[in-house]
Length: 363
Image (cartoon, rainbow, N blue to C red):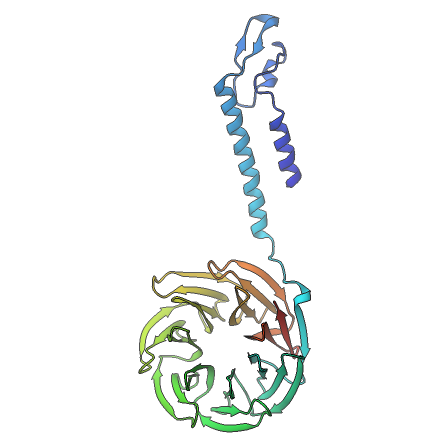
């Protein structure tokens, strides 16, 4: 296409625009297409005179042709697949157990599997330590400064784990815990099986508040501004909860099967919808929503390196999106089934189920 455009430009650059002195035998071939030549003189002495309308018409035709060629190029670029991130930024850490979700900090990366396995990764060396079986099953995990919290979905309990040695310190009953977030000295927990979101005292496991959200909550989000949100899978909604009493104060419809949440700050949240295969950007103040298809079964979201990232489980891809308009910036095949995402130690971490590896993306 570039050669075609170049040739087109060359033709128009050297097209005679009326300063040719040829005789009447060739005059009609010298006028641009669609433009009638203007002659001066008679018979063999007649020459084409370049008038202002003739030059303007030629220029307009030249511009129109270039615009068409540019439009074709732009269309082909839109069809082209987005690039993958550089392989030099990617390292793969083999695990000795199943991996589904993870939670990273500068101190370590806590990894859990669907079979209830637990492991820790040292971010300084990428060494895997503390491989243990904590329960019969595990959903998501949250690493805080002093503890690791694991949702034992099948066992209907929340586990508090010693981050230094993978010892279970406490077990708190909760109905099918899924998403976990820290809010001060408490935890916000999505009880997917119970259909409610709870505020839990992190010291003794007491449920301080709970609210029925009208479906099965999956992910929860506590923003830097103190706003609390929960994704409700079966109603395709994101609900906002009052922080003081945990009551529902707002509902926003999103794509079917929402399972992941991330905060963009200033009233912006991002939602991954597993069933719909979409990611949404929701402006809570204006109500404006942008939605983009990213592939089958997107799971978790994370913001890192100035972009939004989503694990797309069925295609095995890690997809990078623009924070403002959700343009797909890169699509990197990781193999297996990418599920959990977390940011810590100046890296983006991806749990890749089936392949039993954790992928680390460096800056």
